[in-house]
Image (cartoon, rainbow, N blue to C red; front, side, top):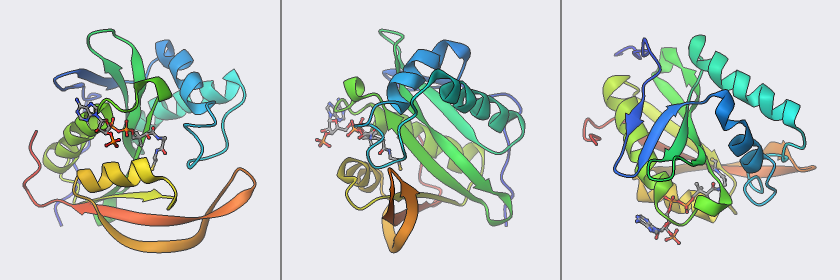
Length: 187
Ligand SMILES: CC(C)(COP(=O)(O)OP(=O)(O)OC[C@H]1O[C@@H](n2cnc3c(N)ncnc32)[C@H](O)[C@@H]1OP(=O)(O)O)[C@@H](O)C(=O)NCCC(=O)NCCS
């Protein structure tokens, strides 16, 4: 097995329209707007309802990188410098060369191809710079925009897990999607 390479410094990535950088205190408002929006959170988890919870998420992201547990980027639009969302690896299994992908865009920034653009870069970084072997994502079956996005990026559906996650007062099924390192993802 080729071990996962953890970046020494937080990796700043750039695409045609986007800058992907580490989350900072300046993103608190954007994070709150995103994670408290019931439409954005509909298939993800119970929306956050206070600033302290968002502060906790922000600290988790910063600490996650420092401790080698997660690698989450803030996505900002180069032209406006506006916060658009977050994406990255929420969890790693180092022994298995595996990472779990997560992504969220503000409602106002959806429908522009931003997440496809950001994830192409993130997947390329994960496979090529970090040597991740398998990147997986779980989504509830009703989350059609996320499923479309994953399929557009080449992920394959591998299974259906029943009542796998609890949020908004109910258990929900989850589909599992994965993409393997084929050596062909270079952006
Ligand atoms: C999942 C999510 C990020 C997808 O957002 P999105 O805007 O559909 O994805 P993209 O940014 O890649 O944009 C693709 C859409 O923009 C359109 N588009 C417009 N201009 C475009 C351009 N210049 N380039 C590419 N696509 C463009 C595409 O046609 C596509 O629309 P379609 O799906 O109707 O065909 C968003 O729905 C979201 O944040 N959901 C809530 C969070 C969530 O559930 N996360 C899943 C966690 S597992």
